[in-house]
Length: 173
Image (cartoon, rainbow, N blue to C red):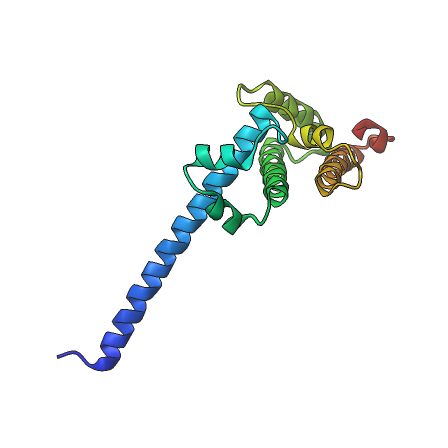
């Protein structure tokens, strides 16, 4: 016969497994909403895409969307932030794999940006589109978009400076 401590441990393990599966499913649903919102915002525009459309395409409900994102504004901010992080990660990886020499990295930077812009999946720069749709400089979405633009310019300027470009800031504009 089993001891009660063995049964308690086994029960705990099953609960932990169930919890991990539940978290994974919740995470997958959250990611699906983000993916759908990203696609719709890029193809239809942010202001033209309502929450009803997002949940219909994602195959979920408004209650579920608002469980993960307290408002459409929060969803927009997360879409922008995720897109920025993914692009920056992609570009960093490409540059790190291409060369260790700053001058070569600078040349490759422009090659990789061209590659990204010319890819069939390219649908514009999300931060630029968001700035255009939310022109009020006090709007949080506009502020985040402006911050992404500033970070990208700073990134270019940093690489240019490492490569010995005298007016690296001007190159980044």
